[in-house]
Amino acid sequence: MKVIGIDPGLSVTGFGMLIQHKNEIRSICYGTIRPPAKESLAIRLKYLHDEILKIMNTYQPDELAIEDTFYQKNVKSAIALGQARGTLLVAGANFGIQCAEYAPRKVKKSVVGNGAATKEQVQYMVQRILNLTEVPKPLDASDALAVGICHLNQPGLIS
Image (tube, rainbow, N blue to C red; front, side, top):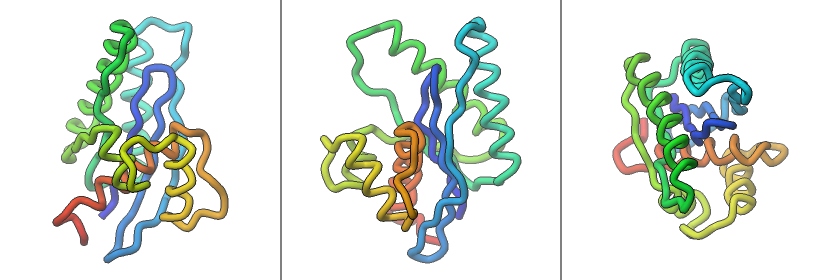
């Protein structure tokens, strides 16, 4: 099974493509998408949509896993994150794959064993779980890989 994990953001979206065979999970690729900051919201969302579709067309994931929103004090930031998430979910639906959403605490608990883990702890454990030679950078990409790992660790998904 191939899964694309996504850490959504309007400024930076992390992605990580994973493949699982039996009990082994491997990273195919990971990185970030950075919509042009000076463009209008509509252009930035379109850019995000188009770039994630390019990645999905290249690597053909079976499912998409995305980090759910969390409580934010800044309403404007929460709305921007929601718009980015919505765009990415629509891209997954347009690609014809199932989309699963995971709370940040669930992702951290799945990867580190502690729902209050730091981003650096998640990054370290992602490196260990995937047997990478170095920690995946930036943090947005390692978070996206963690979302994918969390998804693949759900009961009934072993293929």
